[in-house]
Length: 115
Image 1: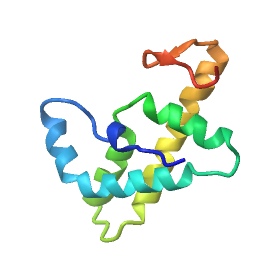
Image 2 (image 1 turned 90 degrees about the vertical axis):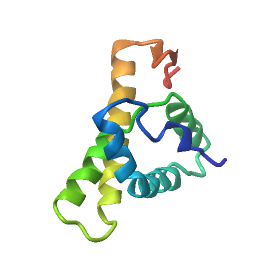
Image 3 (image 1 turned 120 degrees about the horizontal axis):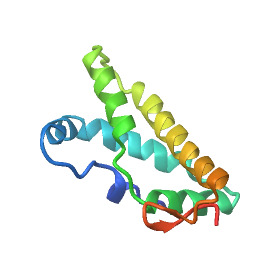
């Protein structure tokens, strides 16, 4: 299964965040490639669950802020992209955990992943 994270990668906002989104576009493409690569597994439930979570959308603000902070700190390589991907995985895991604990039926208007 090939996962497509492109549709859920960039924040759809107006105003000041738009400029940051444009500035970080190349780095965020690298982050999204890492996310896609890491979601692959021979265990069928893993990519299926990952696809469900990605298809639910999201703004990717946490990895965007990670990318921005790295560049502001003078990062001259792309190693921070792994950190940004990890930040997104942790955030997604906390959302999944929250849905399980709360018994939520929906996440972002769609059936919760744990169902």
